[in-house]
Length: 95
Figure 1 (cartoon, rainbow, N blue to C red):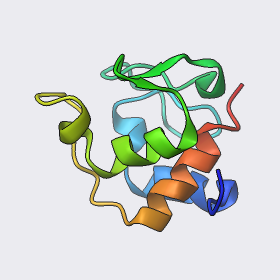
Figure 2 (figure 1 turned 60 degrees about the horizontal axis):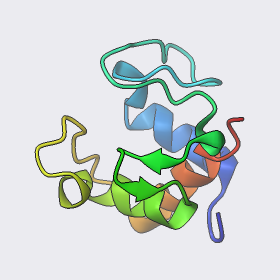
Figure 3 (figure 1 turned 90 degrees about the vertical axis):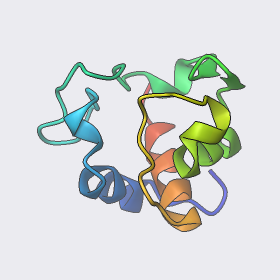
Figure 4 (figure 1 turned 180 degrees about the vertical axis):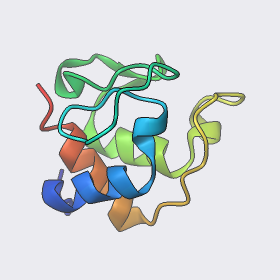
């Protein structure tokens, strides 16, 4: 992800509590099945079944999931643009 730091993204994902709903490789305690697992993220075709799985679209999703899929259970994480870029960079390391 241009402008994203995967190492910082791992911390963003931890701090945002993403593991409360998702299984996320490399994130301690991220073993919930409320939301879909984020394993093999880079190999997915779509984000939320709506957007092509590309880093820039994942940033949009992380910043405002309701804009992409109104009524989604995905909460607003109140991330900055940089935090969303970093989280996207981390998720795209998952293959």
